Image (cartoon, rainbow, N blue to C red; front, side, top):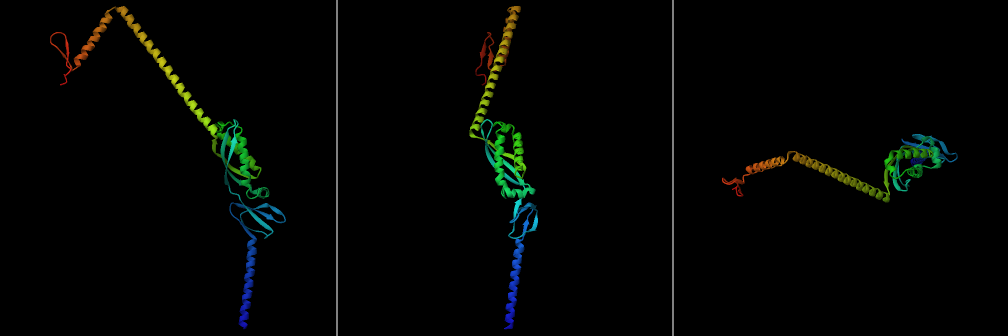
Length: 279
């Protein structure tokens, strides 16, 4: 009987110890929080509100129920958003902007007070559209292509300045996509076709001009040749014509002598063409 009471007492004490240890572990666990690498914490106190100090990496203590940590990711993160903006010449342009952002670590308590944990999703699309519309409105549609580096620089400077007002740092800003509306695209295509037609017309005109000049030069040459022949004939009389006849007869005789299909008859100065001479 005594042994049973001792066992019961031992188990009761063991249960009390286990309960105490469990309660203590729970309290200790609730009083600890961990800030991982690339993160910072902002501590909210039920009596004092948001504490104006940023908590760094590591494991830290807090007062359970009275205090609560809010974790911020301070690593650079990409954000992409699109905007439809009007140009100076009233053309609609579709732009896609990519930014790399991170919060100002020292200003995290202020960011938490004014914007909360999703500060970037609340701010960046809004100021991004605002800056894009303001910058694009300063240029004509074709200038967005010809002066794209200048446009990108203006967007970057303006957006960095606006993000600074919300305690957000921008490491990079880039226009990744730019396209025009259907009407402007058709106008550009028609302009290109018109330019090609104009270039072809210029080529046709230039070719006709060259042909005209060639004809004039050829006619002048023929005129000069005829003039020289006329002057030579007038100077030499009919002797030049007779000389040309003799030279022509000599060329004809030489050609016929080389032909295998021509036979000469022994009598009479006649020529017999041997049509079947190849047999």
